Length: 436
Image (cartoon, rainbow, N blue to C red):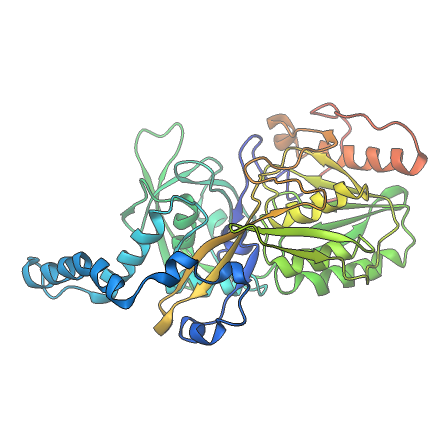
């Protein structure tokens, strides 16, 4: 089944629970060295990542005074709490979690060790989890669609299921992205999800055994009339070599045009986004990283692209985020591609994942915003398609893909130099069947 028609219309598809899958909520950014190495990095980090002047002015005495209430509370818990002994590691992790939460940024939070390990593996192309498309844009983690044959599918999860508790822990008030990370876990381990489902009077419980699922992050095929199709699911460690292999195979068949499908792709590594963009843009600026102090880093095309001249249409939707938007935004700014589909998610910020000492997970922190080559800021805004096409509930049930049909029609118009409509019908009777 086509990856977009798997989703239910109107619900944001953010990430995949394959193992934290597909960048864990759009980490378009940098993996920093271990915390113990930080002092040696003072002269290596960009100035924007170094402490501010105000932070540098703080003395050890100032910091010690600041933390007096913290240690007082710590001692009170150890001396007076009724259930002894307390778990010092849990207290420490809870303190970090609370500190990160007070920043009010949904992309900045504490990653527990298991989640950090799983998310690292997800970007390496190996996924362990329940296997479901999910929505992280509401109050609760919500199932969009189980992946066919996955543990989520076999357990009976359904589109629209809201995860209100994980292993008995209430998810009320917990960021859905953080809840998603809690669902991750090693192959063979169990997770219990408490679900609210429309039409059911009470809650439902599912005990699901996680599994390893391997999915190529980039693959393609030839469609009719000499149109090449490339599906990019994420921006991980294997995406660039898999994309180049795919393009080598497709370009050898002399396609007339190319459809790049970025729907429901939530992002990944910044480096991968630059490499992918460079396959289609010969030279020039790909994106700008804008730091809070006004400084910026510019990322240029690598100059080694395989498809820098072929006409291109890019498919995007509400689930296209972060690295996907970097690629689509650059192609749109340069006029290299026409965008078809729905408004993208609008995740235009950059995160680092800073590992913490003693294998205690990582601090995930927003460090910058990014801009397209034309200086467009898309955070909380997204990219507007040149051709707007929806997928309706009827399309979903009939396994039709009018967005792909519109992309092919738009590409043919580009090739034939004819007019391109700015919108198309939301349902096309003779639309391309899913999977073709």
